Image 1 (cartoon, helix red, strand yellow):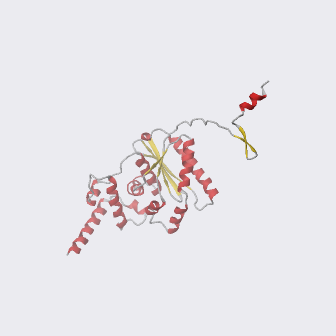
Image 2: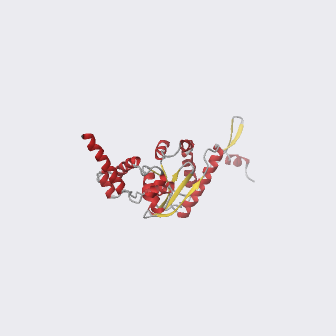
Image 3: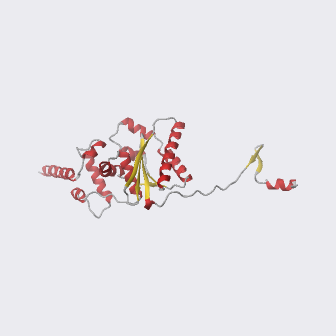
Length: 260
């Protein structure tokens, strides 16, 4: 028979009284999670968040697109339903990452930056964006992926939308969100996205400067380019060199007239 003293001693520290209530404390060590995702050099799953859908793109170790798609969801839902929807989306992304055995790459983003990237959209679209819980999405996604042994990495989103629209939308026939997801995946893998040398030369970019210097000037050109008014217009441009050349020549003519 087990001694009553031994029985009581075995529960010391587990059962105690607090505020006229008996409290049981339990300590346990969770089992280690088996790592599923391989090193990022073998491939990655990039995702791009928008108020009406999430674009995803899987690239291999050389940065080539191998699979892509979008996951739709509603905006403006009550908090409980919104969380449930986010969980469902995150589970789908986790299943994709597990299937490809790769890490997930997201954009580290604030609302003001995203609004600037989507300035051609309507005011209603901007309101949906500001109301959508980006931080909540990252919180739930990080928790779900970590519990499944999948690595998540945040990347600088600078010019990823521009790169996607200019370089990949027409090349692969992708929507803007999937094209941006492809650019994010390549950014996380430290793959460069350089403009054609002829375009950089017309823009007067110093080749010794960082590639973002050229993208900054090219983004300014896009802002005043009459050919591009909507995202769909990017599909119609097969060669940017003549457009950039014509724009620079026009600026030179205007500058020469002012000096006269």
